[in-house]
Length: 68
Ligand SMILES: [Zn+2]
Image (cartoon, rainbow, N blue to C red; front, side, top):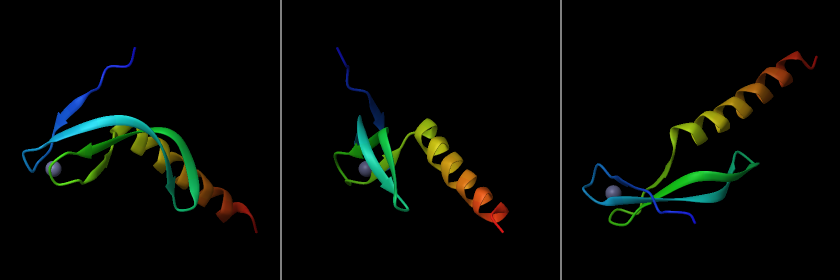
């Protein structure tokens, strides 16, 4: 059973979190923690999920740099 987590949004609304597939810079990331505010409708990425995305994009940049 998956319980719904909520966080406060800076706007005063509530952010509801759920797992979503997200595409960042043409890379598909599966089941990231995506939060959506019910008031201002801004989308957020959890710290863990943001780290995953940054790791992958950074790694690819490094790989590209070595490919000469
Ligand atoms: Zn908000």
